[in-house]
Image (cartoon, rainbow, N blue to C red; front, top):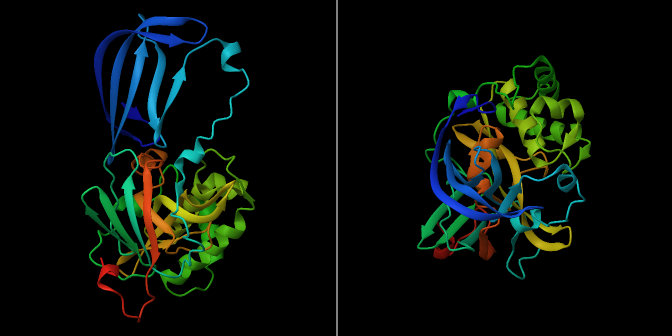
Length: 334
């Protein structure tokens, strides 16, 4: 299958399981052909189930989302346009911090112990800032802002060039990046200035934006963390700095009615001084409260690897580590 957003072909596997009775709105039980579909996306398999009628048309589809399953069903116009039922789907993606975590100082290093709530496997990448180690079914993760490099992979050509979602070669984006960086010396200072500029440029901080490219966000000045991350990544590439988009969780003392939770989040990483360094325009800076799940090039399909784990994380422990220069206990080292 050719995927337009990726500008590449991906392999899709189908397995016809057999006919079965399926409940459909307004029709009741209908016999449909069940088909298991697996799409081989870069770094991730996206599995879903289809139920097809005798003409081969999908009447129902089920796919995993945020630790649960979402169903899409074919029905009449009246059914499809009826008032929505309010579902707290986003709340399923929140990870509750252990009791007593309190305010999390982003400048310090933090250690996490994480387990899958559903018993299935998890996967956490290791970077210069995040060290992850698996111990049976439990992961120990240490996040140290400003940690030095330890042999990370160098940027790929794709992380240096423009894309459908990071239009770093567009004149408008180049002008924005150049003006924001000003007379800054060095890529680190350029990225810090871009981080501030993006935070100030996006005036309407809103979850209402579905998914906008960097150029769209530059023009509309609206969006949530993904729009901040994409615009910052594109601005960095416009100045010749390799960038990528990180997805994961970030600590929040309050989110809606929830307290002390880790919220789905996106930020930007730039290749500086031989390592990947994180910048977060939406949070006005990266810190120990960021838990990385996956990295990509800003394409929504590339978020699949991180999104697949949202809603499945159970935080067993969250603890602060001594600042640099102070002695750490053996247990604090990873």
